[in-house]
Amino acid sequence: MQDLAVVETDADDVDSTRKDRRGQRSTYAAQRIRDMIVAGELPAGDRIPERMITERLGISRTPLREAFKILEAEGLVHIEPNRGAMVVQLSLADVEQIIEMLIGMELHVAELACQRGTDAEIAEAERLHHEMVAAFERRDLLEYFNVNQLIHLQLFVCAHNDALTRVYKSESARIRRYRFASNREPSRWARAVAEHEMILDALQRREGAILRELLRAHHWSGWRATRKVLEPELP
Amino acid sequence: MQDLAVVETDADDVDSTRKDRRGQRSTYAAQRIRDMIVAGELPAGDRIPERMITERLGISRTPLREAFKILEAEGLVHIEPNRGAMVVQLSLADVEQIIEMLIGMELHVAELACQRGTDAEIAEAERLHHEMVAAFERRDLLEYFNVNQLIHLQLFVCAHNDALTRVYKSESARIRRYRFASNREPSRWARAVAEHEMILDALQRREGAILRELLRAHHWSGWRATRKVLEPELP
DNA sequence: CACGCCGATTTTGCATGCAACTTTTGCCGA
DNA sequence: TCGGCAAAAGTTGCATGCAAAATCGGCGTG
Image (cartoon, rainbow over all chains, first blue to last red):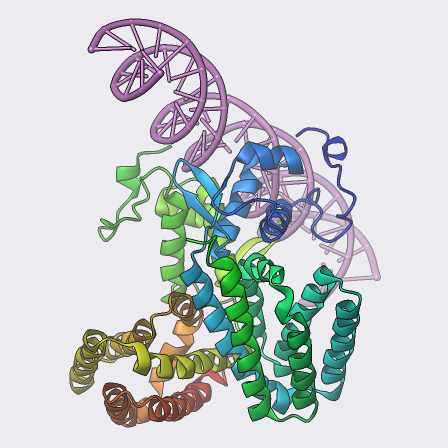
């Protein structure tokens, strides 16, 4: 293998998924490619040539091809025999079905979170909420979007069900890109923040049924906005 | 590579996942191993040596290791660096969390199925129901179990949401073994059939709210029976 | 007898080579 | 100019070889 230290130019991987650890190269590659896909750096529908990634990440083809299999199982990539991996291109209907599922899961989780969340976990949701409002006031869209996702994830943490959390994370990742695209329709922004205010309140009072309905309304109007943006550009 | 025709002794793979097709060996291996795990042929917690599978399936280590990555992403297998793949050992809490999630999904799906299912799809559910009753009367436990799973899956088909169906299938596979184990507590059998009678009725009348509650009761009492069997043998 | 240690054997992680397949290139005739 | 087709170039699928790590086995010590 060539000199890794020379090939590796990124400084941001001082983490546990460093590629130069025996037994983790495919995991590392999967994480890097996942990030590229979610960030939109690898556009939907594009092929991902093996050489491009092996050169960029400084690994050989064997662990890379394992990474592609992981990402295919996650639904981020599609592998066509003899033609290799390509970024999955979701249709509008696909995105809608995934969102319908995620909303359904979150409504279920809302009640569990009210029953099971510890005070500390709910306090963490409140902390995130304030962080999100601060990002809103700064008009920092990216930060707002990220913290927003964390708040919804915190509901799953409160529900104390790892299976739900795992599936929610994985399926959210598949459509993260598209949800972010909806930020190009910012008219809903202030209204969404107001809805979150009520959502936090219901969670703190542990009113599961109310939280559920607030979330239902919140997500469906969010989806309507998203769909408006996505409609012209998705198959 | 050695002579495949000699190594391959199984007669049951005249399907699309034949191992001797270029570009499908890992898929084929994943399917075969998946079957072995779900059937309990590879016990939970056991390591799966590469050599054992390569010899049994007549493929080389490269596609096999890709198959392991697929199965790890599906949650059926865990790969420990430098120690290879082992069958995931779920705890009772893990199984309960997955079942809680599946029940939640199915309750959601119940309402969608009543709204969206075509008459033909609901008729198919009825056909499966009669098939299941026939298996019950024959006291054919395996057939009963299999058709029963198909009926619940048919609800997802009626709901016309591929994402829900996909996740349900994949997560069901992870705990299939444990659910089947609960058949060693057959006292609930007759009662379960009676519950299914009502479930089918509610579906045919498209009474989503009623179907939902029937399913909730059906699944939770099923889980209580399952837990009784699993409790002594799972961590 | 239990326990730890060290060498031998086995198993895994990865890079690489080769064959099969796909895509591109370049050439010819219409 | 435009298909169309064949050779060339490039890519992928898989088996294999080698190095690193784990496991096994035997032996000595407490």
